[in-house]
Image (cartoon, rainbow, N blue to C red):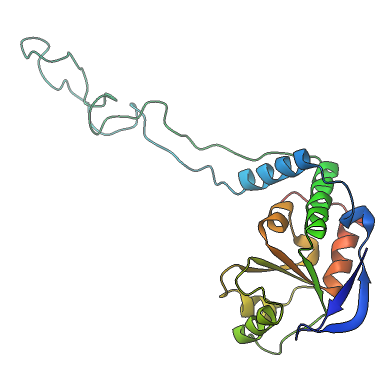
Length: 215
Protein backbone atom coordinates (compact mmCIF):
# COMPACT_ATOMS: atom_id res chain seq x y z
CA UNK A 1 0.00 0.00 0.00
CA UNK A 2 1.36 3.42 -0.98
CA UNK A 3 0.30 6.76 0.45
CA UNK A 4 1.41 10.23 -0.66
CA UNK A 5 3.59 12.29 1.66
CA UNK A 6 2.44 15.85 2.28
CA UNK A 7 4.32 18.96 3.31
CA UNK A 8 3.43 20.79 6.52
CA UNK A 9 1.47 23.24 4.32
CA UNK A 10 -0.88 20.40 3.32
CA UNK A 11 0.43 20.03 -0.24
CA UNK A 12 1.73 16.85 -1.87
CA UNK A 13 5.50 16.64 -1.76
CA UNK A 14 5.68 14.44 -4.85
CA UNK A 15 6.93 11.35 -3.03
CA UNK A 16 5.17 8.32 -1.61
CA UNK A 17 5.74 5.98 1.33
CA UNK A 18 5.26 2.22 1.27
CA UNK A 19 3.04 0.85 4.02
CA UNK A 20 3.55 -2.86 4.52
CA UNK A 21 0.47 -4.94 3.85
CA UNK A 22 1.52 -7.25 6.68
CA UNK A 23 0.83 -4.36 9.08
CA UNK A 24 -1.63 -2.01 7.40
CA UNK A 25 -3.49 -4.47 5.18
CA UNK A 26 -4.48 -7.45 7.32
CA UNK A 27 -7.97 -8.64 8.24
CA UNK A 28 -8.61 -6.94 11.63
CA UNK A 29 -9.14 -9.28 14.55
CA UNK A 30 -11.79 -7.51 16.62
CA UNK A 31 -11.57 -9.95 19.53
CA UNK A 32 -7.84 -9.33 20.00
CA UNK A 33 -8.39 -5.58 19.66
CA UNK A 34 -10.99 -5.70 22.43
CA UNK A 35 -8.70 -7.69 24.71
CA UNK A 36 -5.76 -5.34 24.17
CA UNK A 37 -7.87 -2.23 24.81
CA UNK A 38 -9.26 -3.85 27.97
CA UNK A 39 -5.70 -4.69 29.07
CA UNK A 40 -4.49 -1.15 28.44
CA UNK A 41 -7.34 0.47 30.36
CA UNK A 42 -7.08 -1.99 33.25
CA UNK A 43 -3.35 -1.36 33.54
CA UNK A 44 -3.98 2.39 33.93
CA UNK A 45 -5.90 1.81 37.16
CA UNK A 46 -4.07 2.51 40.40
CA UNK A 47 -6.08 0.07 42.48
CA UNK A 48 -5.68 2.16 45.63
CA UNK A 49 -9.39 2.56 46.56
CA UNK A 50 -9.93 1.64 50.21
CA UNK A 51 -12.73 1.96 52.76
CA UNK A 52 -12.59 1.21 56.49
CA UNK A 53 -14.32 -1.90 57.69
CA UNK A 54 -15.86 -2.50 61.10
CA UNK A 55 -12.59 -3.30 62.77
CA UNK A 56 -10.88 -0.17 61.41
CA UNK A 57 -13.23 2.70 62.22
CA UNK A 58 -12.80 4.81 65.34
CA UNK A 59 -14.98 4.33 68.42
CA UNK A 60 -16.99 1.45 69.81
CA UNK A 61 -14.75 0.82 72.77
CA UNK A 62 -17.66 0.68 75.15
CA UNK A 63 -21.27 -0.39 74.91
CA UNK A 64 -23.28 2.46 73.41
CA UNK A 65 -26.32 2.05 75.69
CA UNK A 66 -27.88 -0.44 78.09
CA UNK A 67 -28.93 -3.85 76.84
CA UNK A 68 -32.62 -3.64 77.67
CA UNK A 69 -35.38 -1.13 78.16
CA UNK A 70 -34.56 1.31 75.34
CA UNK A 71 -36.87 -0.14 72.71
CA UNK A 72 -33.99 -0.18 70.22
CA UNK A 73 -31.91 -2.96 68.74
CA UNK A 74 -29.22 -4.38 71.02
CA UNK A 75 -26.19 -2.95 69.22
CA UNK A 76 -23.00 -3.54 71.06
CA UNK A 77 -20.89 -1.01 69.13
CA UNK A 78 -21.22 2.20 67.14
CA UNK A 79 -18.95 0.58 64.56
CA UNK A 80 -21.94 -1.33 63.19
CA UNK A 81 -22.29 -0.97 59.40
CA UNK A 82 -25.93 -0.04 59.98
CA UNK A 83 -24.99 3.20 61.74
CA UNK A 84 -23.70 6.45 60.33
CA UNK A 85 -19.95 6.51 60.77
CA UNK A 86 -19.78 2.76 61.09
CA UNK A 87 -17.64 0.40 59.08
CA UNK A 88 -18.28 -0.42 55.43
CA UNK A 89 -19.42 -3.90 54.45
CA UNK A 90 -17.46 -5.48 51.59
CA UNK A 91 -15.87 -2.17 50.58
CA UNK A 92 -13.03 -1.85 48.06
CA UNK A 93 -9.54 -2.85 49.14
CA UNK A 94 -6.18 -2.17 47.39
CA UNK A 95 -5.63 -4.62 44.56
CA UNK A 96 -3.75 -5.04 41.30
CA UNK A 97 -5.93 -4.66 38.20
CA UNK A 98 -3.23 -5.60 35.68
CA UNK A 99 -4.28 -7.86 32.82
CA UNK A 100 -1.67 -9.90 30.97
CA UNK A 101 -1.58 -10.61 27.26
CA UNK A 102 0.93 -12.46 25.09
CA UNK A 103 3.34 -10.47 22.93
CA UNK A 104 1.98 -12.16 19.82
CA UNK A 105 -1.58 -11.04 20.63
CA UNK A 106 -0.47 -7.47 21.42
CA UNK A 107 1.33 -7.29 18.10
CA UNK A 108 -1.71 -8.62 16.23
CA UNK A 109 -3.93 -6.07 18.01
CA UNK A 110 -1.73 -3.16 16.89
CA UNK A 111 -1.68 -4.44 13.33
CA UNK A 112 -5.46 -4.80 13.38
CA UNK A 113 -5.92 -1.25 14.69
CA UNK A 114 -3.61 0.18 12.01
CA UNK A 115 -5.39 -1.81 9.31
CA UNK A 116 -8.73 -0.41 10.47
CA UNK A 117 -7.39 3.12 10.21
CA UNK A 118 -6.00 2.42 6.75
CA UNK A 119 -9.34 1.01 5.62
CA UNK A 120 -11.13 4.10 6.94
CA UNK A 121 -8.59 6.35 5.14
CA UNK A 122 -7.74 7.93 8.49
CA UNK A 123 -3.96 7.92 7.97
CA UNK A 124 -2.13 10.98 6.66
CA UNK A 125 1.60 11.00 6.02
CA UNK A 126 3.62 14.16 6.46
CA UNK A 127 7.26 14.94 5.85
CA UNK A 128 9.63 14.94 8.82
CA UNK A 129 9.72 18.32 10.51
CA UNK A 130 10.91 19.94 13.72
CA UNK A 131 10.76 23.30 15.46
CA UNK A 132 13.63 25.36 16.81
CA UNK A 133 11.47 26.27 19.81
CA UNK A 134 8.01 25.33 21.10
CA UNK A 135 5.27 27.21 19.23
CA UNK A 136 1.64 26.15 19.55
CA UNK A 137 0.56 28.22 16.55
CA UNK A 138 2.80 26.18 14.25
CA UNK A 139 1.01 22.93 15.10
CA UNK A 140 -2.34 24.73 14.78
CA UNK A 141 -1.36 25.85 11.27
CA UNK A 142 -0.54 22.27 10.31
CA UNK A 143 -3.92 21.04 11.57
CA UNK A 144 -5.71 23.80 9.67
CA UNK A 145 -3.80 22.94 6.49
CA UNK A 146 -5.18 19.39 6.66
CA UNK A 147 -8.61 20.56 7.94
CA UNK A 148 -8.40 18.39 11.05
CA UNK A 149 -8.26 21.09 13.72
CA UNK A 150 -11.55 19.93 15.26
CA UNK A 151 -10.69 16.22 15.33
CA UNK A 152 -8.80 13.96 17.72
CA UNK A 153 -5.33 13.70 16.21
CA UNK A 154 -2.51 11.34 17.08
CA UNK A 155 0.71 12.89 15.78
CA UNK A 156 3.44 10.26 15.46
CA UNK A 157 7.00 11.53 15.23
CA UNK A 158 10.11 9.77 14.00
CA UNK A 159 11.89 10.24 17.33
CA UNK A 160 11.49 12.07 20.62
CA UNK A 161 10.98 15.76 19.81
CA UNK A 162 10.34 17.85 22.90
CA UNK A 163 9.60 21.01 20.89
CA UNK A 164 6.81 19.35 18.91
CA UNK A 165 5.45 17.82 22.11
CA UNK A 166 5.38 21.17 23.91
CA UNK A 167 3.87 22.87 20.86
CA UNK A 168 0.92 20.48 20.77
CA UNK A 169 0.23 19.73 24.44
CA UNK A 170 -2.10 22.73 24.89
CA UNK A 171 -4.25 21.88 21.87
CA UNK A 172 -7.36 19.88 22.89
CA UNK A 173 -7.61 16.48 21.20
CA UNK A 174 -4.00 16.39 19.97
CA UNK A 175 -1.53 13.83 21.29
CA UNK A 176 2.12 13.49 20.28
CA UNK A 177 3.97 10.17 20.52
CA UNK A 178 7.03 8.52 19.07
CA UNK A 179 6.01 6.26 16.19
CA UNK A 180 7.11 3.04 17.88
CA UNK A 181 5.22 3.75 21.13
CA UNK A 182 1.63 4.08 19.91
CA UNK A 183 -0.64 1.52 21.59
CA UNK A 184 -3.76 -0.13 20.20
CA UNK A 185 -5.96 2.07 22.41
CA UNK A 186 -4.28 5.32 21.34
CA UNK A 187 -4.49 4.38 17.66
CA UNK A 188 -8.19 3.58 17.87
CA UNK A 189 -8.99 6.59 20.06
CA UNK A 190 -7.76 9.04 17.42
CA UNK A 191 -9.89 10.20 14.50
CA UNK A 192 -6.79 10.80 12.38
CA UNK A 193 -3.25 9.41 12.46
CA UNK A 194 -0.86 12.14 11.31
CA UNK A 195 2.41 10.30 10.80
CA UNK A 196 5.82 11.66 9.92
CA UNK A 197 7.68 9.69 7.25
CA UNK A 198 10.27 8.63 9.81
CA UNK A 199 7.51 7.53 12.19
CA UNK A 200 6.22 5.07 9.59
CA UNK A 201 9.60 3.40 9.42
CA UNK A 202 9.98 3.37 13.22
CA UNK A 203 6.50 1.92 13.70
CA UNK A 204 6.93 -0.82 11.12
CA UNK A 205 10.33 -1.82 12.46
CA UNK A 206 9.08 -1.92 16.05
CA UNK A 207 6.20 -4.22 15.15
CA UNK A 208 8.06 -6.65 12.92
CA UNK A 209 11.61 -6.74 14.26
CA UNK A 210 11.60 -5.97 17.98
CA UNK A 211 10.12 -7.42 21.14
CA UNK A 212 7.31 -5.34 22.61
CA UNK A 213 7.23 -4.43 26.27
CA UNK A 214 4.04 -4.47 28.33
CA UNK A 215 2.27 -1.13 28.39
